[in-house]
Length: 580
Image (tube, rainbow, N blue to C red; front, side):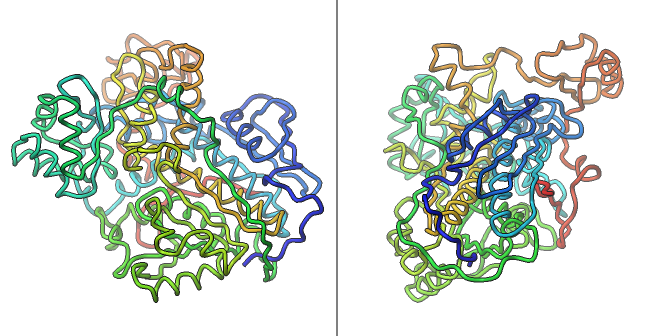
């Protein structure tokens, strides 16, 4: 456990109370998001947020964040192109597509806040960290790390990478997402609508693996069947089968219901704890701290992965027999490459949480930990006796973190998975320009951004614990991630303006042998289609336009740049921060 902190005379209620954000100089990427999140955490702001931002206060020497675009990118669209985001997002369409929302920049902004919080924690624990650096390019690589790992694996993907996928459209024009993790519910839903058995059978695998491949070439017959039934009949089929459906909501609808809540909440306990242990002998901000992670799929495991990159010892709580996703193809040295992207370097302990004896053992482990993290379904932790109050009884200094789908903010909401939250929160409109129908991305946008926000919330909780001597509960969600990503578009909707970007926005330009991306608002060269990529780029660079090639095959990233290989031979994206 962390060393005991001396409680301040005036106990802060937020992690950054009493600190100020100083931001002189030129504007930089994600400055507004960083300033907003630091303000929500208690910092006072002076100056305009820019490429260099310093957090300082009486208790700390100050930490400076430096945010850059990277080695080749000059803005959001070029960052999406060179990191493979365009290629992955465009798989559903069969060609690269730019996200109309500022996804890479948003991720970089959250990582910058993490770097500042981690730097303050490091200083409080005796380190000399004074500076954190993040680039938008590295944030983009982190966002596609699972897809990169699969591209460098020893075997092929588990399902075909080809155009296609949800959403579906009913006979009365309702565009909807379908979600189920159960093949029986999938089959029952489509049988209820009269779909051909072969189409149902052949559709399950691409639908099941769409999280992994970012596409889902389900048979056309399923789209046709959905289009023969009205929305109410589709909903009845979902209710009777156990599957769930969600109509796509617009940004205007989301803006009208938005509750103004921050992307996470921190609830401090009144009780203090007595920490022990010596300061770490390394500058890693979280060295010496222990994180227990009971997470599955992407969101919580990514949160814990980031905490591990910052120096924490991460112990995964896995079911008897181990996490079944360890075997999810494609593999490297017999272990899922995609699983390694989120879980390499973690220890693992098998715990049967259905067993009273194993739950007791887990509570004993949590009594010695600094962070307990899970993404269980709502109500499950309380039913198991593993909620915040249960674990904090023996460990008052515990930072108890829950990464969920909805955080209880939308009563009656559907299953809290990435694509359902995208549908419900208006993301389908935000990521597509006005000349394309609203369609949620099949790239796991919110799982990744939700994992980033989860790590930000845990770091904020750890800093608040350090300053108050009391444990903290932190809650983050995919809905919070959606709201952060769509905030600019949602603000336009609230003002009565068109929330979507104009036709053709961030659409890559085809060349004779590939694709190029131009900075936002740059003029498209009329002759690019007849030129090689290299020649088109040469001519644009001569005109002073910072165009870049679009990475469509992620394997191209493995032979250049910062990607390394882990002990299993799986591609490994570097830590997104540099500390000094």
